[in-house]
Length: 330
Image (cartoon, rainbow, N blue to C red; front, side):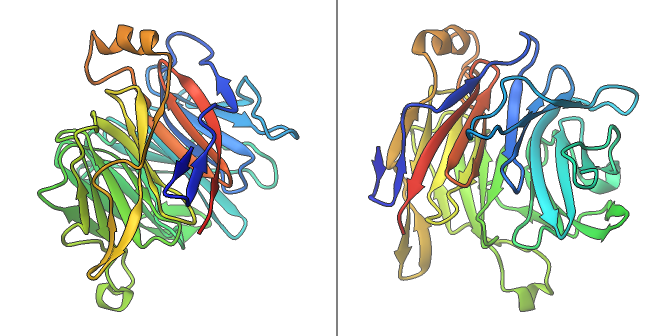
């Protein structure tokens, strides 16, 4: 299936992973920087599952590690994000209760500590109903998260890697009238573009990063979006991800049985994204989708989305995980 001749995805998924139990609601997903690990946030069981990639490129069907159990447990984890700086690899977990747990990888193995290396939270953090989290590329020295209640995106500066320490007070807070109940966020690989899935008004806002010299090196975006996608095909958008080379934008719809792709185009005033999808990919069996969606119009469709190398993954409580292969042509 071709997208403006620059993005091609195999509409048949490569692999599907079923949740280990009926109570595990897959909400957020990400690949590690090497692509060897896939993390999935399971909100109802308050855990994050880690899956290992095998030699044939597929992931094991069962997780090799479960994070969040025990006295240092998670509280409704909804999204995950990996980062790497030098030899330090981190995994951030957004919790709906208004906190972010940051785990550190143990040396050269694939395990993460049973307890967070650092936690961001409290009134000063401006976190509330935090459903989305992402490290800010290309340096990964800031961590951004959604505040669904206040309709803002907050950015936390990393102070130290050894030990892992972040500021508890946001260095920058992005506000705009187009941001309404932000449910997910994603950055382009270079960090120039920030996309926000607005659950509340069924739109997507795309912001450009300000000049580093003007912002003093802080990851400041806006003040106004370069594009607000108000496509009627959007149904409670949940998560967003940029393709690494073309910056095509993938958007999942929690209330529809598909995910959309929007193509960037260059205009006189800079980059803009299409208002209509260049493609829609059916995500799940329609009968199973309807059974959930008829009871709750905000559920049943794909939620989390992640891209790494030539793999694209989506997840949801009903779907589990589906992994696709894709190609880009610049």
